[in-house]
Image 1 (cartoon, rainbow, N blue to C red):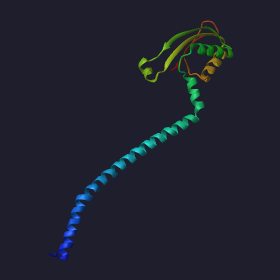
Image 2 (cartoon, rainbow, N blue to C red; image 1 turned 90 degrees about the vertical axis):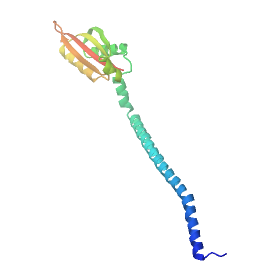
Image 3 (spheres, helix red, strand yellow; image 1 turned 180 degrees about the vertical axis):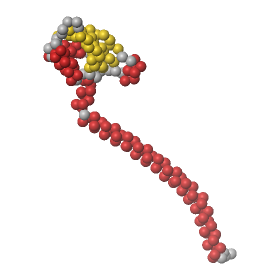
Length: 174
C-alpha cells in the first residue's frame, strides 16, 4: 500500500501543525508569562535601586554638612541641661555688662502638649531680673540672639528704678 505523495505531505504538515499546537503553544504561553514576570521584577529592582541611590545621595549630602548638623544639635539639644543653660546666661550677662539679680525657672514642660508630642520639642522658660543700663541690656539681648542656642525673649518689663529689668526667656530642647 502506497500513499500518494500530496496526501503524505498534507498528512505530515497536519501532524507538524498538531505537534506545534500541543507542544509549542503552551510553552510559548509559559514563555510570555515568564517574560511578564521578568519585566515586573526588573521594574521592581529598578525602583529599589533608585530608592537606595537616593538614600545614598542624601547620606553623602548629610556627611558633607556635618558642621551644619552640629549647629542644629547645639541650637536644639537633646536634653534641657539647666546648669549649662544657667552658666551660659550668666556668662553672657557678665560679658555684656549686665548683672543677674534673680534667675528662676518658670516652666519646664511642653508649651502645647499635643503639638509638641509629635515633634518632641520641650520649652523651658526662665524669668531673669537684671541690673544694668539700657545699652548693656541691648548687648545682652543681641548676644542671646547670636548664640548657638535658640532663645526667645517673650516679655520685657522695666522696673520702677532705673536699671532694673525683668526678662522672660524661652528656650527649646528635645
